[in-house]
Amino acid sequence: MPIEFSPGRRSFLKAAAVTMPMIIPASALGRDGATAPSERITVGCIGVGGRGSSNMRAFLEAQGAQVVAVCDVDRAHRERARKQSELTEADSYLDFREVLSRDDIDTVSIGTPDHWHSIQTIEAAKAGKDIFCEKPVSLTITEGRQMADAVRDHDRILQVGTWRRSLEPCRRACELVRNGYIGELHMIECGVPEGYQIRGEFQPGHPTVPVPDGLDYDRWLGPAPEQPYTPGRCHFNFRWLLDYSAGYITDWGAHYYDIAQWGNGTDDTGPVRIAGTAEFPRKGLYDASVKHLIEYEYANGVRLIALTSTDGSKHGIRFIGSEGWIHVESNTITSAPETLATLELKNSDTRLYQSDNHLYNFIECVKDRKVPAAPIEVGHRSASICHLGHIATTLKRELKWDPVKEQFDGDAEANAMRDRAKRAPWTLS
Image (cartoon, rainbow, N blue to C red):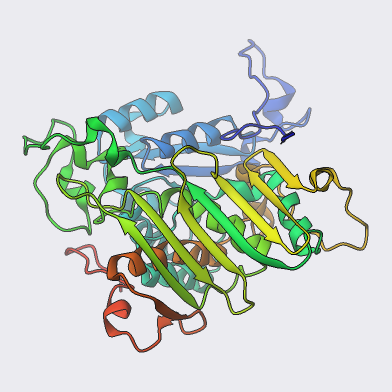
């Protein structure tokens, strides 16, 4: 039977409910376990639609943080976020650079589409801000390396939004694998859903229409190629367009490959061989893959199989060893033998980084300047697996990868795909 854990999939530890008495409570002064205002980290939220909105609400509920600015290119998103945050119009921004210019902001939460992550992260690091960045951290392999270097060079704290690193079941599964409880690890399976492009509502012609009032579409495109506006291109739908993402290979893959890396002990490296196939839409606006089957091979001989699970039966991460297997997805563990999932670890066993709440771990690390649960180098390596799979399935051939040099062996065409051109003036120096 599955072993269920809590909290839930998107749960952040909820802050205590706050009342509004006529006198100043002890909590406002930092007593009774609450955080005094002077000790809270200040947060500017850049990109407050979709997942960025969820992250903003989590910061609003966190005792150790205070949201002081919101930014979005869509006025409707911006206004909703401003009201939820109880901010004035002066704290609501169209241009993220204005948020970075504020000396009273300690950290930024970046919840924009993938094609904006690198520019905003690097500029934030230069501005001396710590960063909570949604996954996948990058649109390309080169961007990820540039981001990691900038965060290191400017001595910043960055937490990637791969929140499964802060779930006990995921950590436990990786500890069981790393300590040899399934014998010798030889294969990892990562199953993600099919892309939404196959659904009927994604098949219309997506006609070009006027840009709606309140959306700065040119800023939304940013470094991506200039394209005519259609509603099916923006907001959550960006996932299905290669100008901004690579479908579920990068979306869900960034979560699942991250845990595969953790269990395999390869956080600071990557595979050496990649081969796979993918099904791409044959018509319409969307061009990211709908289905895929990709095999990665590591120098230690472990194979990672990334696949599309049509019925959901293979969603999650399955570690397969010589003496059993263990499967984990968020808060659920199953295993063979069945008792493995509840096995008590020995005191002598290797333990992995423990974080019980991804957002609070970030806040604590900003304060004490320690490495967070999902630092940029780890996030970059996990995102690189996504990008490697996309490149291999696009080129339709086996590729050899050098994870130290971060380049393909003897393949100029594949190496050219490690990065993409950026539309002026949004370039990385």
